[in-house]
Image 1 (cartoon, helix red, strand yellow):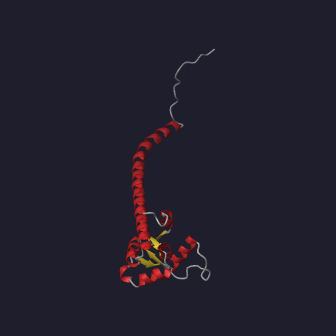
Image 2: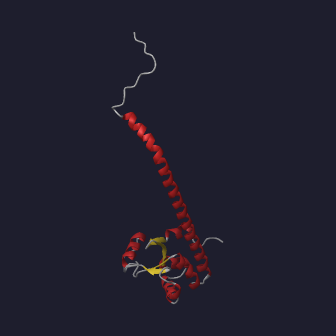
Image 3: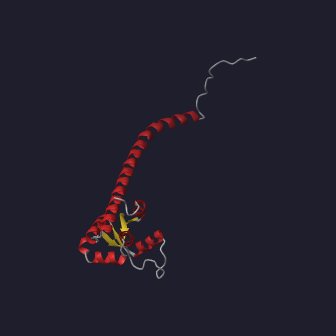
Length: 170
């Protein structure tokens, strides 16, 4: 199946709020091909499907941070006029039971795959970080010996060195 939306676009629309990766109602609505109002009405009619760990409303501070990240205009000039809903990965998955158009289902599959890909990338990075830390600990001990040897060579109080070889004095 061809992707309706480039993966990079989906990745760029995933934000970090409250230590969770989320997507904003406006971005999801755009991807699903509906208005934000239609998406939020469908959610409102099915609130029992969206507990707090699936969806939450951004605080005023978070909404302000979001506006600065995505450079939206001021209220009255096409900007965000209300606090948007943020959907976690589980909330996005639940949207497929609320919005049932073929496009919404296809886009939903893409979004879930993108979340899964990002989670895998983070796990790989975490494994890499742990390996590097282990190597640093291992090599710190080995390099301590090298640095100690260098310090001894640079020590001014070291014994004078005996010259090796011969010298032709004329």
